[in-house]
Length: 258
Image (cartoon, rainbow, N blue to C red; front, side, top):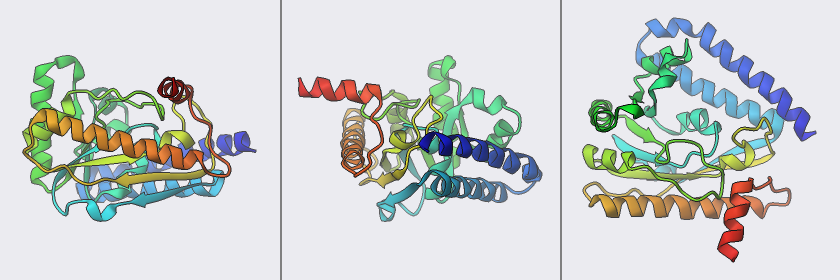
């Protein structure tokens, strides 16, 4: 049954996304806030379809901890779900993303329309300077700057692999950093079409104040995200019908027990 539901959802999800891109293409010529509303509605629709077809619900914790103005958001990244499911959580997010994604027809064009922040990771130090410059411009508009500190999806329970760019961004923006933990990879695993029933939890954690030394900020952000993610994974695994833990997470658990 789970396999059948996963296949049905995959068809519905990609058809739904294609319809939003094609039928909403006129938004490329509209004000940005209109296009952002279309992006938010796509996220809400996708979350709803996932619930209806696969029985995967969504719970948000800690929304009251989000600052009212601009801030840096450092979120765990476990699943493709994060790229759309997190959008409605924030007021006006500017996502940090790979520059290559901006070349994809329609999807990339819309990403430019949303004024997301593109990173050319092959450019070294100059890419970091451009990242900070563009993020400052978005922050000046009062937007949340959302970055995945590990740069790519990591399986639930896998050892953390935080890149230096996020802490340089924290230092360069001079804004509080809001860590975000989640367990989405348990229910929407990477490199798999399977979608498991249960509850995806996104938890907004206590903000890290601006102005801390880089090393201290990096340690606090990573510790808060990883400890909260471990707790959310354990909570999901304790449910009556838990989703499977990916191989990387099982290996990490065995290492911790040894």
